[in-house]
Image (cartoon, rainbow, N blue to C red; front, side, top):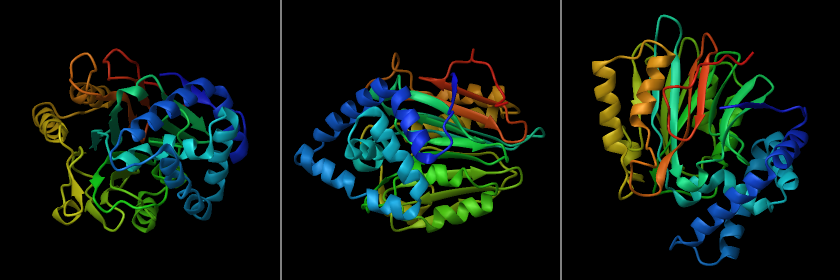
Length: 327
C-alpha cells in the first residue's frame, strides 16, 4: 500500500488537503454508507440519519477541537456535508456491523501489533495509509483513523463490538487519532477508559514495554489483558463476561471461527517476526472471492513497534507484500 504524506500543517489544512486529494473516493464511500444506513430498520428517513449524525459534532468539538477542525476540513475539501463526514467516520457505530482480527506478539526484536479491517465490501477500494507528522494512520478515505502507530513506539489496533447500550458519543476514529499523539500505553489506556465512547469497541494499545487490551461499551470499560509477555488476540466477541452483558454478536458473524483459527495458528506456528504475523493475518482474512456475504477484509496493517517496520494493504492480506519503514 502506498503511503500518502500530508503537506499541510494545520488541522483544517490537513482536512482540506485530505478532502481535495481523495474527493471522488470520499464521495463514493459517503454515498454507499448513507445508502446502507437507509436500509437499516432502526432508521426512518435520510433526514433522521443526518440529524443523528450531526448530534455527534458538539461532543467532538468539546473533546478535541483540532480533530473537529480536521473533520470540517475533510467536509469542505471533498464537498460532502458535515453529516456525511460523520457517517464516513462513525458508520460502524451507527450501524454496528463490522469485523476485524487483532493480534499482539512479543518478540526478541520488538513487539508486533496488527489487524485485519473487515467491513462492508463497499469500502474495499478505499483503505489508505496516511502520514500525519510522526503518526502513521491506517484508515479509509474521509475517516480520521482506524488504527496506526507513531515514531515514539506506540501502536493501536481495534475490533468492533456490537453493544446494546450505544448512544450519541465521541466519534471513535477521533479517539484513535487522539491516542496516537501519546508515547505511552499507560496514558493511552487512561484516555480510552475516560473517553465518552458512543458504542462498543475493543482496543489493543502497546508500546515497547506495555500492552493494554480494553473492551468497552458506552457505559462499561474494562482492561481485560495487561500482560506484554504473552501473545494476545481478539476478534468481535467479548472475552469479559461483564462487558458481554451489554454486547451482542450479530447473526452471520465469523468472530468465533476467526478467533479459533488465530488460536490454532498461534499454537502451531507462533509468530516470530513481521512476516509471520502478516501470514497469520492472511489466514484470517475474509477474501471476497471466497466468502459469502458483504463483510470482507478491506485492508490490514501490521507493525513492529521497535524497528518501525510496517506492512499495510488494501483488500485481503497477500503474502507477497513487502515490509517498509516510515523514514
